Every structure is written in structure tokens, then in C-alpha cells.
Image 1 (spheres, rainbow, N blue to C red):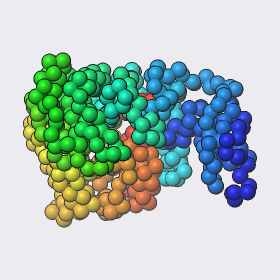
Image 2 (image 1 turned 60 degrees about the vertical axis):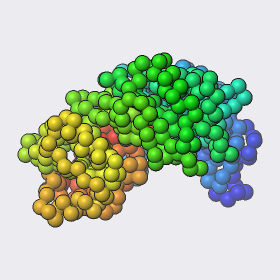
Image 3 (image 1 turned 180 degrees about the vertical axis):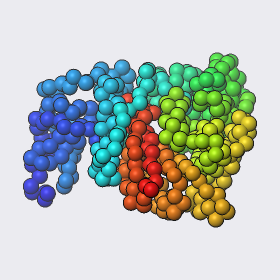
Image 4 (image 1 turned 90 degrees about the horizontal axis):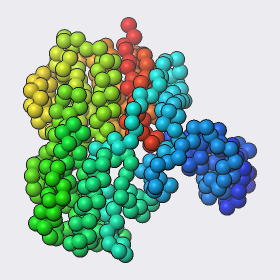
Length: 458
């Protein structure tokens, strides 16, 4: 479509019907074939939109007035929902969110993977889809009147000051507010991103859902933490549930949260939590699933799909701190886990020891290099489990799986688009996707996890 043929103009208003949601949660409307993306509207609604941006193939708009309202619209309980960019779907009823996520997985499998004849089951949701996150990473800044701490406004780095977040564990809210209050009293400056000045960049709170243990991480721009002893004493006094207070130093001009140096100021280096019967040690920088209740649902499904016997050997590519590996080890003969991050492998070995699980081996390296090396050593996997990052599996790993010919591949995915792409490669390489189970790990956001089971074609 050329510039001259675009049927809308910036700042003009149009009446539209909304048809669908994007993977970012914006509603989709069409005007003479031209696509508009409009946040906070819902499929089935009619409304007046103001065009805010016009590109060659699509544009963006703002909902000015709803003329027809979806029966699935919900009133967001969060007071800052319309400013904050943390959640995208509080205005959609939870049942409808689960159906939307199932549809999203199904649509992407058909469009990208050309996979249309398999069951995509209804999304497994939560009984209570609030207060589920066990980790808060909250930026801090100084404004007139003192410190502010909260999440960024959508598509900006402007902090929305907040007292609580309805998808956070209440213990984490309490940590953030208490640290903000104490730091304010001690005149510790928040971070100025533009000038790269100030001290306190982030407050990170971690919470053990089962153990109730709490860790406080203070991320500063400076090597020194002003009023350190008083800060520690007041945190301990006001938050007796805290087991660990940690200082992380990030002197760089970056939006990456953590720096390289981490020191324990008081208490333990780790807090602990459980997923099912498996115990995990969690440090300030450990990767650990933020919704442990749904993580168990996800891993139970992966274990079911793996159909393990006591004679099976399993390879867990992208094993992280060993969460899935240790689940699988309870049923398998032996599990081999590989992960590129050395600290994660250290954590995985520690977690295996913590649970007295000795039928696992963990290796540091790229899965696409380590697994062929294992294969050359005579290790044969009956089942391969992959749980890659959002970018999906490395092509070399997929080719390795196809060459190794395990009976089953269990694919745990946090991104339906790369799942569909990778399933297509595996299908072309001799595997058949049997079914896919979406799991809602992040209620009120557009993120969805999925587990797929593939079997080798005989």
C-alpha cells in the first residue's frame, strides 16, 4: 500500500469494529483493508479511535469511545493499570484470557508451522490468577518529594510510583515499600537514568512460596552503599521474615538490571523454595520460575508427555538451574543436562546435591555442541527435552536431535512463534507433533507457555 492509498490520517477519528488481539495485547481493527492496532480495546467491540501513528502497512490508534462493549470485558482492579506497562489483559475476563491464549498458540502453529491437525488443548489456568509472582525487580528514582519505586509506563522509562502490584506476592510489595521508606529517611538518592547519577537503581525482592523466606537485593550505581549498617539494621527490624540482604553493584550506563559484583551484606547467600517435592536454592541472580504454582503444572505435563520408564535416558537441553532435569530424574534411569551459563550449572549441581539426586550429570556449554559430543561418547537419549529462550532452539541443535533419533521430544516453549517454527523443522526431519498444551504462567499478560510432544515416525 503506497502512502497515497492509506485510507486514514493521523489525528483523525474513525469508527471501527475490533476483530482480534495481537501477541502484545492490542486490538486489531481494519479500515478499507488497512490495519490499526489499538490498546485496551477487545475483539467484538465497536468504538471510535483516534489515529496516533501511520506506517505504510499498518497504524496505531487510541480508543476514544466504546460504542459496543464485549461481554468479556472486565474492570481492572489495579489503580495504575492504564498507566503501567506490566500487564496487558486486566480488562479481559480471566476465562476469556485463557481462551485467547489457546487461540494464539493454535493460530501461530497453523500460520508459521503449517501444523493444523493436532489438538491444542484449553489453556491450564490458575484458580486464583493474582499475587503469583515470587520476584519483583523494581526501578527506583528521585523526584520532588522523595523516592519513587514502581514499574515503567508502557513504552517509556517513566516510573509509575505504586504501593502495590496485584500480580506480585504481597511479601515483595512489603519489601519494596519498606526499603523505599528507609532509603528516603536516610536520604539515599534514587538513580537518574539520563544523567547516570544517584545511588539506588533497583530493589529486587525474592520470595519462597513454600518456605516463606525473603531475600532483599539492593542494586546500586556506586560501589559504596550509604548508611549501610543503619539500612541493614532497619530492614531486619521491620522485615523479620528476611533471610538474606544482598548488595549488587552496577556502575554501567545500561538498562540491564544487575552488575557483575554481588556481595551478601547480611544473612544467607540463598533462600530456598520447592516445586513439588524438589527443593531449590535461589541466589540473588539465579534463574527461577516466577510462578512456582504453575511451574509445577507445566513440569507435570512435560513429565507426562515424556512417558518415562526406569530404563530411559533423558537429555535436557537448556537445563538452567536443573528444574526440569530434577523432575525428570525422579522417573528416568539417567538425565544429562546442558546449559550455556556456568553459574546456572553450579546451581543445578547444588540443587541435585540438596535433593540427594545422583542420576543426573550437568555440563556447561552450547547444547548443539555438547550433545553431539555426548553422542560420540555412546550416550543415547530415549527422550530429549528442550526448554529454550524466546528465540527458540538453535538450528544446529534441531539437526542434532533429528540425527540422534530419540523416541520422543518434549518441547517446553515460552514463545508460540519460535515453537511453531521449530516444530516445522522437527516434523520435516521425521517427527510428528501429537498435541500441544498451553499453560498460563503469567495471568493478565499476553505471555503463554506451551508443552508439545513429538514422536518419531516409524
